[in-house]
Length: 167
Image (cartoon, rainbow, N blue to C red; front, side):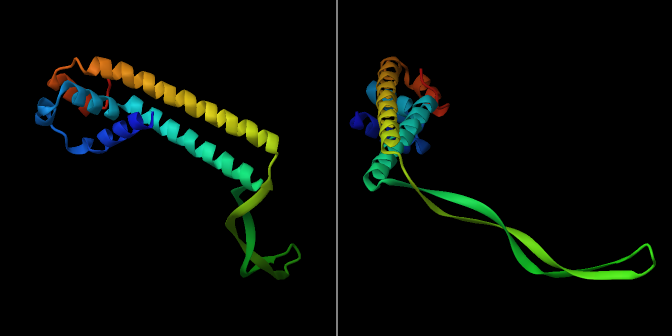
């Protein structure tokens, strides 16, 4: 499975300067790999799998250390000098007062939260299940795409490649 993802990522990485002449020089299998790796649907699925993989690692780390770290931001009113205001009262006298002036400032920092081990284990299992499902979807999509793309002419394959589409 990792080999499939590696091939798809490598093929996708060099897609920026591929021409029709390059596609004409490729074997049908090479064209199929390029088309399928560059397809938008495959790229989105690979990104989803990356997200699930990161979630699995994060849950494993959380379980190992026993707590969760996350950033929390809070708005504070910070004293910012004084301002003087004057007004004329109903009796004709001028009243003045000095008031503290404030500015708002957001401060962010790490917050430690102890975790519920049972809940975190469920979260880890859910992430692992989602990752496995995602990998299976990649395998199915790749096989379907490769079977169809291998039969395309170089021109058809290049058009699909250029449009980030799969057959």
